[in-house]
Length: 131
Image (cartoon, rainbow, N blue to C red; front, side, top):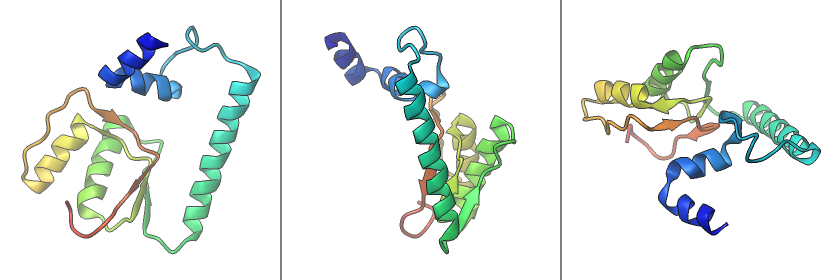
């Protein structure tokens, strides 16, 4: 446990892989159990109900198509962040492709982080303006 705590403080990848197991094969580290399967199922149900509830509200919501390829999802995310009035973006993908498109659209320099990958369930716009 001490090694895990030390690694978590110094390694964002360790944290990400520890808390986003759906994206990585962690079967050796955390064998599947009935309880874990049920918790995952309950999490999926909760997420679906939450999104369904959001869709009933009078909000400007953009849903990025899951059937698009990764690059298309990133370009759609960048366009939505800069040129959309969407208050909520569902299914966003952010990595270097998205950051480069945002830099192109805004005329600002990119952060140039080739290791960044983010797939938030929801992006919520707060405040006014593109910043």
